[in-house]
Length: 175
Image 1: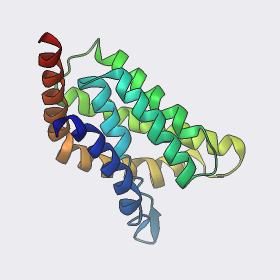
Image 2 (image 1 turned 180 degrees about the vertical axis):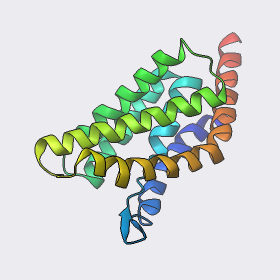
Image 3 (image 1 turned 60 degrees about the vertical axis):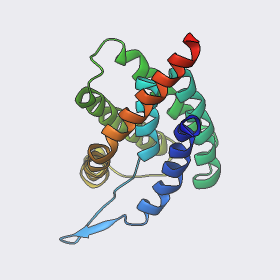
């Protein structure tokens, strides 16, 4: 069962993102704020850091392609960004301590990078006409707050599950 737990969590997070996306935008004092859930990429980053970079990149490619097909009309955007973020996180994790707090901060930084890349891409092709200041105030900061709450609630569980699976895999290879 533990063997399939990594992929089951990935699938659940993939399906949870649009459900939590229904709560966005929220209106406070006449302003709309957009909360974009990025649960899957955060889990994939934990997967790249604590378990297996190659597997995280394959999952990123697969779920990125699914995200492209089901949620946006531009094929290849998420299927490029997700594996790239997993690769970058695994390389950076070699040079920093893999403590949960460090990994959480690193994950949140990569979520901000994903949001910024998407904003720049959509601005470049002319789909969005939002200024940088509006993007930061209306979308990036609320997204980071919402995803921070999520990772603070579930980051320790991700680490425990992935390290447990890694140790099982290592024991199996020793036999």
